[in-house]
Length: 260
Length: 142
Image (cartoon, rainbow over all chains, first blue to last red; front, side):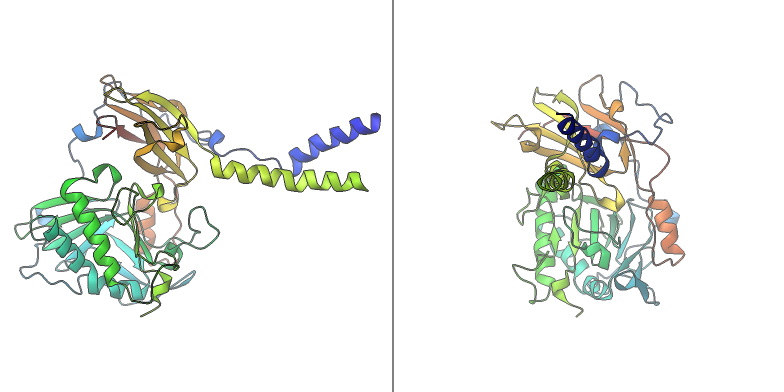
């Protein structure tokens, strides 16, 4: 009897020591202080707030190109970088005169990002053309420039819910939040990729853009290849997706596309 | 001998099996609430975020039609990724038109600075400052 009791005791402690786990969700907020801000009782709903992240002041505005060029719209810096999983070039989303500009989590503050060289080539070849044709299909004014609000390209990590590396680890993926389209007069129209904004012309643009980008991929990509469609979006869209992509469009130049 | 095998099994297999099931199903309801038109809704957090190194996905889920009682079966109306959040901070406004919470987001500015410097292995950190994130509670079901 005593032996059994000791065995049970041993098991209880051993389980706790060698295999027990604690949930990260239970520890949410435990390591940080949130006292620096207060949420007022009468805070406005998101749609009632003014768009505070407005385009930059006029003196910083890049005038839209007079002629719309659909190719070579990204300014790529010269040096080649060696990232953890391979090479990359650096896009400068601030360069005046280029039709494709953008920045991290901002509709107006431009910046840089890494792309795999082949992804950069394909972006230069097809991205703005897809923006242009999608705007037309959605009945929006002709864009002369696009400012992409994005949440990153390169990030050396695994795909979610997977042990495989993400396309972000190869700088072959780009998380897009908004397309800010500027017409010939410099007027901006924001096209969001969020699930909550998937309606009317924004939905048409979203689906059209994804279909166009898929067409721009090499024929080497097909069912069975990871992310062979060239993008992952939300489930409401025509090309489908999953609940992990309700707050951005995951645009890729997948591994199946090779280095061409 | 057989007891030793049982101990070995319990010690190494059982916890990992538990953890696996745990990973697949884990979520936490931060707040159950009603939409502006009376729809049943919940703010849920899952360890499924990834945007710019932010590990948690916060979702506004809505029970439309004859969905089951499990919030994970409800429609996701809106979502965002965060580094961390304060579960106690979740609150609806006095008009009942929105819900807000306090969160920590990724430090995009620092990441951008590393890119400017040409650092080829930029690290993503979380901001110290708190951000208020919101969901609208209007027009939740089609």
